[in-house]
Image (cartoon, rainbow, N blue to C red; front, side, top):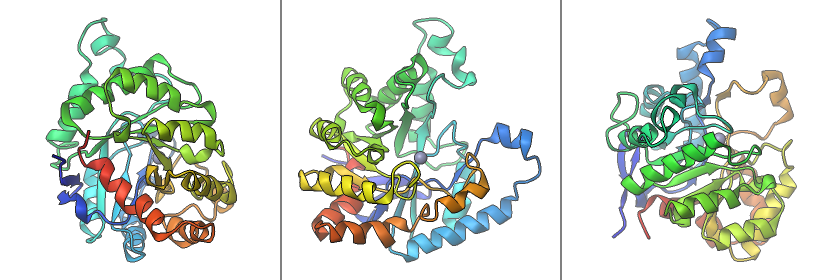
Length: 325
Ligand SMILES: [Zn+2]
C-alpha cells in the first residue's frame, strides 16, 4: 500500500493533488553566519518576504501547483519564514526538507557529537532528521517530506558519507525519499549507488539532483537503469552547461526510454547570497518560469509528447513521494 498524502509546509495534501511540480527550487539560499558578519543590517525581512510572495504567485499563475524546496542545514533553512510566504500564496504547495548540505566535512555542530566524538555512539543526525519528518521543523508543525544530502567533486569524504548514511537511516525509519546533490561530471552517482545500496535504500526513492549538468548520456543511462530518478534541474544556469545542451540531454534520455526517470527544475531562488548580484545579468533565464516558458516548448520541438512532459512534471514527482517498494 502506498501513502497517498504528502506533507507540505502548510500540512498534508493528497499526492494526487500535487500536479505540475518544480522538483528543485529554493525560496532563499542564505549563509546566515556570513551574512551576519559581512552584511549586517542589509536584510530587510518584510521586503524580501513580499518579493518572494510576488514571484511565487507568478509561478502559481503560470500553472505550477507544487514547488519542492531542498533548503536544509548549510543552505539557510528558515521554515517559519517559508510558512509566512506560503500562507500568502494559496494554490501553491511548498514542500520542505530535512538534511545537511556539505561537500566535505560535517557542520561544526556535529563534529564532536555522536560517532564524531567516540566511534560507536549513535548518530544524532538520524534522530534530528526523523524529528523534522514526524514532529515538525524549527518548532513549527511543518514536517519535512524528504531528506537532502550532497556529494560534489570532492567525492565521498568522511563527512559526506556520514551525512549520506544518516539520511539513509532516517529513510529506513520513516519511508520518506532522499534527494542527493550530485556532480555528474565526477560520476558521483556511482558512489551514491554503492552507499545507498549498502544502506538498503531503493533507488526509485532517490533523486540524483543536477544530473542534467552533464551531456554523458551513457553515464545517465547507467544510473537510470539502476532505478534512480535524474534531476534535470538546473535549467537557466547556462554558464555551467548551455541551454541547448541541457535540452539535448533530456531529449536523448527520453529517446532512450527514460522520460519517466527525469524531473525538471531550475535550482533557482528569490535570493541566493552565494552569487555576486552584478553577475546575475549573465544568467537571464535563471528564474522560476524558465522551464514552462522555454524548456517544455523546446522539448516538444525535439519530439517529446504530452505523456513525456506529464511524466517529468507530474507523474514522477508524485511517484517519488508515494511509498512504494
Ligand atoms: Zn539546490
